[in-house]
Image: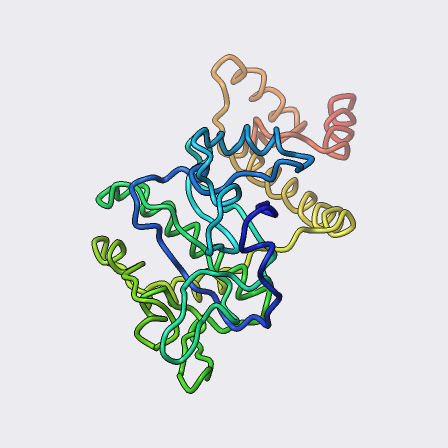
Length: 281
């Protein structure tokens, strides 16, 4: 997406160890503020239609900035909350800076969540769920344990952490995100790790093949028909003899044609033949 950015042109690949969360610290939930397609992108017009155009030219793809992330979460032009990937997942981000022990930039996929009004609960819930789903996807993709840790640069580092976590571990610059925002809504990174784990454990039913669908139908349909007929037969058996037919029904019974049981039920071919034979006699 952002091949003109300083980070994209100056970074290198990495071995992935985990996922690191950021939030922007600015009241602007719109992705277009930070993310714009490259000038020579084949789908530039389509992307601008989705994102909206940054008319100030201060997006991170068109200014010199020694920062860059693998993805961003925020609003498209139509207000939809979504994720936009801005670099390959194995490209080393310039996200959390460095601390006295080194940097989580080497090994941790990083994304920014665009902040809005900090008290906007609906927006927070939407981007939080989006971030959880993205992280669950990345953990599944790279075989990462969301509750696990990695021993790195002499520190025990969570597989999933935020910018402030990296600072406290001596592996990032002094930033307060994401706690300055998340704590207002009763969330911390322990909640994140548990929610990511839960998302990974929610398995969807796999798509069925055509043969499996046909097999299921061949087994279910006869049973469904049989059950429906049995239900209808039971209901018809209990229906009373209508008043307009009482006299003739009694005459047919007296003539030995039938016994007046289940008067409104269907008769089989055998029953019809026997009643016809008796009537002829």
